[in-house]
Image (cartoon, rainbow, N blue to C red; front, side):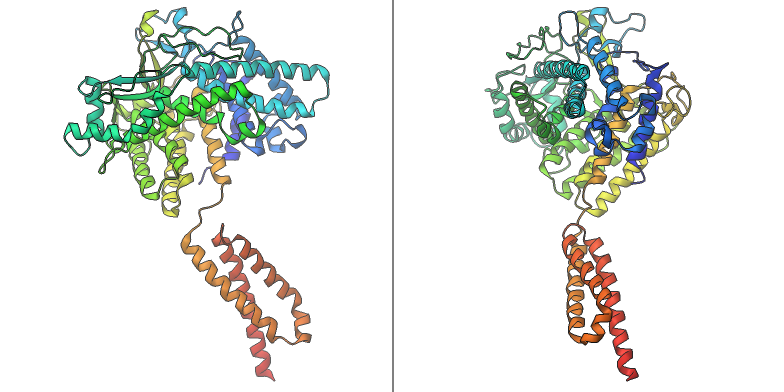
Length: 610
């Protein structure tokens, strides 16, 4: 990849600290003002890399890297940076806890009214939203891990007390976010002959088979998912799935669903509010929820023991929903023996709305499923084709024409209607403008599991093109310099928007950079062809080395000991790495073969001279 994730992340950190610290005080809010999601995204820009990448850790002051200290110089030195972050986190937790002690997950200024002349009511702005639950899970896990490690190096009683207080409140917010995610899950059951059923059947029936046959095959493939969903006993989503004549879909609504039962738990999560969101899964909020749930059962969460026993029970319930939802959408997206529904762009939802963005969201779930199942390169190649086409259709790898409709996906973004919100005021919608960065993250995801060097190179080349597009959208001047998002720098028809940063887009860019860094940290792909060549070369080199040991007489061998030891060491190293890095092994063996040939030539010349 042309991208250098470490350097890019350091530049973002410097820009985040510059934009957030105004006159020595942390300043909340960006383009869309301050709300529970935007402020979470702003903090995640710092906390997520610090928790996920060893080279960016801030919790052990003596081990903080020099370039990290330089990037965060505005926050202080290696000792002051953690202290500053603890104060900022404490302020965040204060703001988003109400007077009853309940953590607040309101959408606030992210909610948009369908009527430009009428703003959302205060009651609507206070509605909880899945985006806030999801982001809070990721942020609280990052904070808890940071505090758990940092307090080991703290001796001052006052600071330890502050850390424990923040830790307790962060754990409470994490618990509340998990409970709310459980109360936002939904299963939508419908008849195949209904409008929803017909829309789903049209999507999956790519071979124009008889409808009855399609329904029967669909039911067969979803048997395991149906059985799993039927066993859910906590939170929302408990519906009757015994009638096999009906079909269904599952995922997350945009908020706590109507009539969602309270989750019984001994954890302190505050009052559990009633919900107004419909019992319908929304693709965007489903993907957002799935992303955060992954963090609950990550290696870091397990190793640091970030969840107590009660929280682990909630996490297990969410992981069950994660497994079933991923399996459901993967089976729907890759249904049939011919062309997949996923490849029939744009994706059409069951309410008969279609968009390239919906295709990207379904692709995101398919990629996550493939990451866990280690799919074959044949399957990955087809997914790569979808990603490639989406990049072209979204005018990321193709030039946009004047008044080109796809540009609207980037700015102002895809409009997502929040059904049910009109119960408390004007109908509202959610604006989504992360198409390019979501596409980039999924491209890197597929590249990371591909076992074909050709496909990996193809995907990394696509990733470089998408990243170039995203890089051009960064601010180059003003308070948001080095941050995102200014799409008018790419699409000239668009007007320049506010100079304030979009924490929504910037956080997703940071999340991608962390994923890219992790991909680079993994072992390179092992080529079977290179491995065979390396083994053949190593066998020849070891045989020639053994011959040299026999041929040279004792006196001559004494003078050659340094060279022979060097050859022996290189052959030994090649033997160690030949399985994981056959190309590097070939390089070492090639050097040995060259040295052995020079020894043979020297011996021949000496023989001819005599």
